[in-house]
Image 1 (spheres, helix red, strand yellow):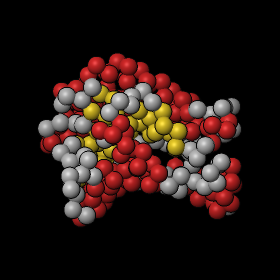
Image 2 (cartoon, rainbow, N blue to C red):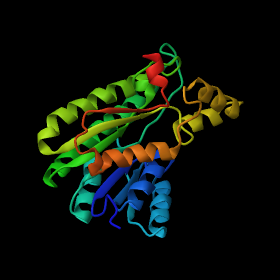
Image 3 (cartoon, rainbow, N blue to C red):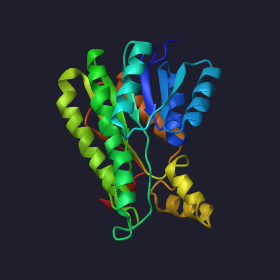
Image 4 (cartoon, rainbow, N blue to C red):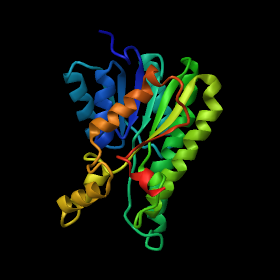
Length: 257
């Protein structure tokens, strides 16, 4: 049976761990040739090797998404190896837990650089490659905190809110080029940044239970929830979807906005 992404090439930034790792595995299992891109080079190598061991195709790439030259070189390398860029997933992100007044200038800049500048640079260099290939799909990993505020996450909320309008702008500008740009906005998930923050506290299980209880569906998002949504947006099943925000949050944003 033909896999839905057979013959397509993909870049997944932040692919060395968390949701990016899960997404890289899923896209590869569905036929894509995946560039596992991350500032963590050993981690990217491990993920790519695991994908290859499973019988799929992947290559690790060390890239700092805040550096334009490295992003441009990443896109060029993928196109040189595969002949095209068809799917771009921007999953690289950082989080700082601090109120507005307690957020340092350095932390603010770091969060905005990785979470917003990074996707901007990836779109800036990735979209032209997609246009040359006849079109493609870019999926940005947002957050429910791009739609609602949360005490203690000033920089993160700002970065994810701005990411939504960046995606809409890119979608509008490149709709005639058959390039689609969408956002998947998960709430707290069992994989990724939230778990790392929870596990740094004195009561990680209590934190996870509290957040799950406050979610209308009564649970955290799973990695499968997220990579299923990304696969949908990467595939032809979503051919008429662009500039959209998919709130993958168990109903949380619906209750609060």
